[in-house]
Length: 55
Image 1 (spheres, rainbow, N blue to C red):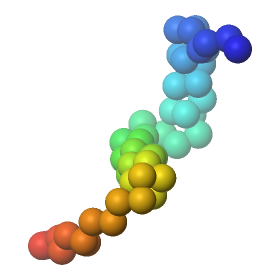
Image 2 (image 1 turned 90 degrees about the horizontal axis):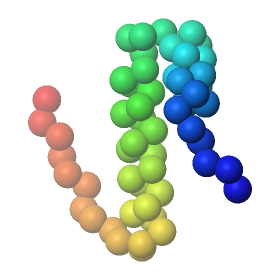
Image 3 (image 1 turned 180 degrees about the vertical axis):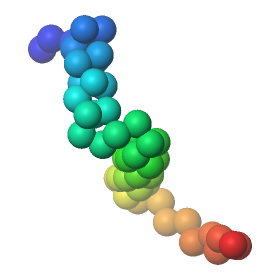
């Protein structure tokens, strides 16, 4: 299987900027990161008590 190189990565980044806009990308990346973290936690079977966020 071929790995993604720098030119392909730049193309993907350019398309993401066009689709979401520059200001929306950090929010999308944060959501993606949280989703990956939750997926890994679910695979491990660990259950942590929910932390209450204070606003």
